[in-house]
Length: 314
Image (cartoon, rainbow, N blue to C red; front, side):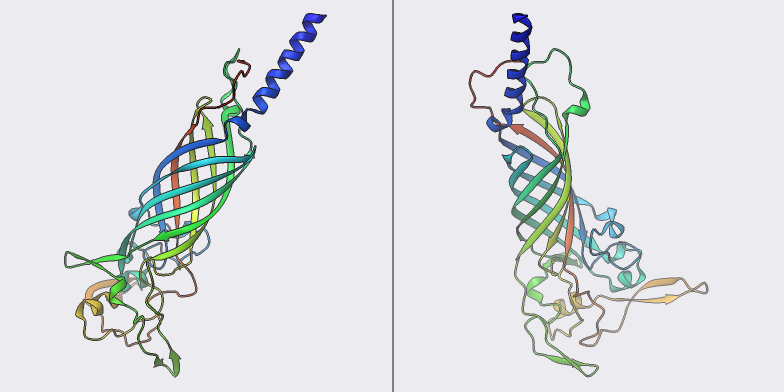
């Protein structure tokens, strides 16, 4: 009988030790690689832009790379905080859209984006604490955890576009008359925005899952949507504006093409440039919505070595 009690006590102590091990393995480092999808005024699908999750407006032709690194600290057993740094190369082009209006607008951009932020994770499928040694293999499903995340941070961006084989920074060109005087269009007065900066904030939401390879190493997948505080990631926000005597600025401000309809009512975009828009013509961007982008990352995790001593080796 004493042997049975001793065995039960040993199992209880082992389980308690394993259950509390997270307190001594709170800190992890991670690195991620993946892709991004831009959700703004340029490019996209055949319909009007979708401005919430934006799935229907994805343009897979312009999927571009994303890299991320950071640390993960478990505040509570199922709640973690993750400071991160990220890099993404964003790109979109109206020419690839199935929307006739966007094809005819004929604008494009690319930008390096650097992020610094913090995320909070809540594990709705809790992360299991694996024993150092096991008498039988743990089922694969027991090694899977899943979480939701919210976060925020700041980003740097610098939209560029190409003209005749030369790449230009768009922000200094003030393509929508930024900083210029007010004007009147169809009886209404409009004032162009001030020149925009290269920094903005972002807010993120997402889902993720992890698979524990062993006690130290893990792999995960994470999808998150970044909602920014700027509508100028792609340099497109509001109305056409006659920019003045700078031919380069004028070219990037209005690059429209003509389009006509064939006998079946199908729109055909020609290569002939349209007449320049008059100042105020309201078809360059959608100022009601800010820009966003989606990350899809594959992540590798490593738990830093525990400082706990004399743990039972079960």
